[in-house]
Length: 88
Image (tube, rainbow, N blue to C red; front, side, top):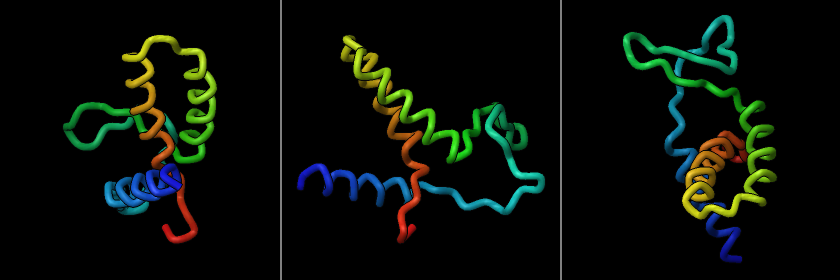
């Protein structure tokens, strides 16, 4: 029960952070992306993010270092934040 409540809270938090921008044509693909004069960042399409998340989760199972694991868990949360629910 605790896990489902935590997951539900995380989903609500993630959905409140989603930035809705105008549709881009052609669509933005996974890769380096720059907005105006800001730093270049990395855009990861949702379908790619979920595949990356699954592979990262498997790799983390063998990660012995607590600090590295903590950093990877943050990345995993970001990657999984693109998962859309029936309500979202």
